[in-house]
Length: 154
Image (cartoon, rainbow, N blue to C red):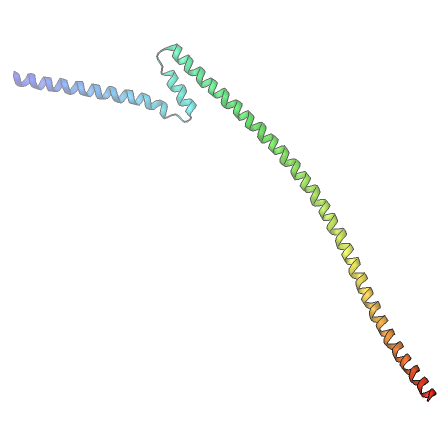
């Protein structure tokens, strides 16, 4: 009888330990329910819903709602800043495009002015060559006239 009682006691203690461990696993599984959710807001809502006291759950959900309202306001401010930035960048792009058009116009004007100056330079060089040729011809004529005069005078 002692042996059966000992076996029964061991059996009951084992059952008790199994129940305790199963209960612990069930509790930890309930906690993991919320951590398995995607966003932090979903996890917070899950934890609030697990609260036993309705007032605590309500306060918890209000905090989440306030937090979401703050985030929404922050995102709206960010959107406004992005829109302003977009507008400013658009204005800068338009200004740069205007400058590009003006610079291209100036480049065309300067190119035509350079072409005109190059043409004038070529004309002046040709005139210089012609005048140099005339001067050399006139020198020869003058030299011949002086020689003729000297021969006449001698």
